[in-house]
Length: 422
Length: 132
Image (cartoon, rainbow over all chains, first blue to last red; front, side, top):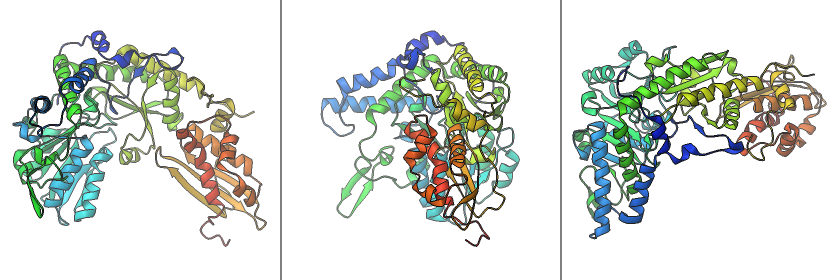
């Protein structure tokens, strides 16, 4: 994760031509301006076609059939696993578990590792900027085991309070569960420092990579991360597939989470023996075609280049701050553009007009943004707001779209110009 | 606007949002209630002064949220200031949507009905220290 990404400029026009949905014309003939990429991204033809091809020519269940189609399907599914391994530089394919998404990945660790390893005298350290999916599983673990969940506060600038982190980290800390990039603030957390310090006190680190893996190069070995969770649908893959990376010795020692087919070596009427990795954590028929689609999305990401994507998003973020900053009474949440990812959350003074009204009126101009608490209620409470509007960028967005956003926002302000009832 | 979508940011809606009726606190509050819409975080609180005959002598609201929830609170308070508890009880959700006027999608209907829910609870919620 770096602050000033290199990489060649993107040919955004030809990228956009790969995404059928981006040429969609909405109500009243307005073109779609899709700026809700932190919620989910769109996918190129290449990903859609890979899934169509699988269903039309290669589909059967994996690791089961002694027949040609099952071999085909299994090969494609395992090829996708290898693509994920290479993307995050995991040492081996066995450490890459397919789940249904980031949420399922974090819940797997909370149940499997958590239930077996923590008790009332232990602590889990989270942060105030976590998505609910990296808070609630730990609250639930606390209910089951009595472990204490403590949180690292966020500064007024929207960065992690590292002094407080140092104070909170102790020999009681068993796990630090932290997002690489805030889905609201765009803040990029100093994972190297956090992981080094956590390991020095004997704590493990789970990285929520939902907002970082799709946008920046991440290397689990260089980082020395213990667990990494992310989703396919936020990186041009289909919904319904996600990844849990875990270091082999940790995954080996963890009991299975879900029980069923595939995750067993042998079943007796009075018990079972779990399968080896990664099958041990893939109970039931896995998301076969979504995983293959994710593999195609990784091919696409590699062809474009993550460094170029990061650079493009930095440019759009800086441009958005510049253009939106010219609107009176607009306030940004989070660090300045040079220090964050492609996420721009904002609100008007006194939250008037309100984020929901902003989103509803922007939609009329075809501009899709998120409004609300973005599954981060504690963070909004910390900034004393109940909702923000959020524009989030990806490789196919353009400066012209940022201009459309700024123009549409000026129109919103016009609707809510001061008035008195007659 | 989308096809067939009625304008929800009508003048009278915006008027109530920007220049609300009785946003504030009742001087002699006997009944009050506050609630939020957890999906979006909108909050509305209502303070009432109800006399022995069951009449709303004072009615005020406060809150934080979108144009729909705050404007509908203003319309509701304006409609029932000086009316009776019985009249409030007989006022249905459908009538609230009708009072608001603009046609709303199911998601935004929740915004509109938040103040109505709060008022229906407030008439049965004596304030601390109130004898009723």
